[in-house]
Length: 262
View (cartoon, rainbow, N blue to C red):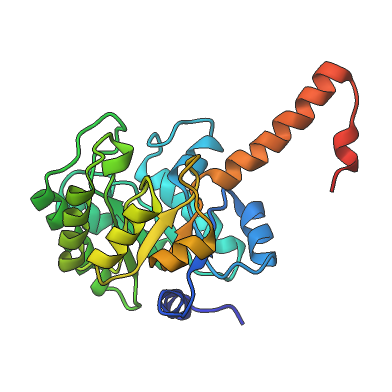
């Protein structure tokens, strides 16, 4: 019998409470979701970048409806818990973040992340007060659901050129106080920065793999205090790299040796 959304939500929450960090891969379609489930991963996440790429668009160019349709497809593909990359909640107001949480739950996901910057990648970050207010609204919406939705609060500091560890910690602490269940600062430059983040907050910390030079091992991240490891677009990019390598061989050499590779 398929697991209920409530059962998936409880299972997902329990993963954050286990003795070890867990890897939380990001499929880009139903087929990749099933492949990852077959390998034994225990939960999945959508990626805004990968979901846009499969439609031939750039990260941040999907509407809320499109992002949620993508999430539904990932949810339907397996019986694993799925959390969604919900960008900034698809709006600047706290009410936008809250509505997006409710709609994401209707789409079948059991968790989701809200960012502290506008969806346009060159756009501004929200000030810390506005950012925390948005997380508080999202947390209130999550708590009103009939299952334990796991809300991740994400600061974009290191992806938007604000390489300020102290401000990053202050933002994550404010988000924790506002009701976030998981805290996330993609792009941290070193394991020392990761350790500082994990020591400064009480809620589980997510680390994102995918940036060259900043993709540490599971053992290193777990020792630093990380509880959850996501992969962003890295698996999608790896898959596309294999496609391009095979296609170049065909185009440039007229051979098909790629079919003999496992």
